[in-house]
Image (cartoon, rainbow, N blue to C red; front, side, top):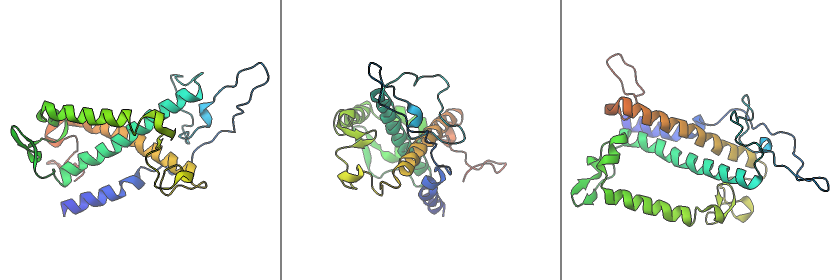
Length: 222
């Protein structure tokens, strides 16, 4: 019964992260300049600007940046969001469903089930295992997920399930492109906050892996 509840939670998590309001798109910014002047890039007209906050940059980091630098930042944001969405699901999965079967290492004999949940897993995974993880992540960053192989922020050339004309995103059309891409941004942003919250909670209450379970007073998620 508990596992079924967790699976139902995972199935509905994406829709729970979706913002109810559409993106706030500023008036089209003219990118042509008069003769002798330099055209300026305005990030306020890009995706991810939503009501009621609008364009959020209290430190002014985007002031004066060009489109190339903005696209670099947006690519990093999308990557971080995608990783954190998987990490958030992983936190809940290991608590509600369990661990992978088999061994993570035969020297010493260490099963996946022996790896603790949460931050404690960092010290339990063998050093060679971490080296393999970092090596594989590096191959992805330098290869298929390199910023040099993308057509747009987050749209990499190797993955085109919707066809070249749709930019590689399944279910994305010209009519719903802005909405779908904004949903992905919002899901990733909330997942980043969620993962940070779980990690902080795990440090404070390591016996609960950052996820509040029922206590004597009945407080908890499950």
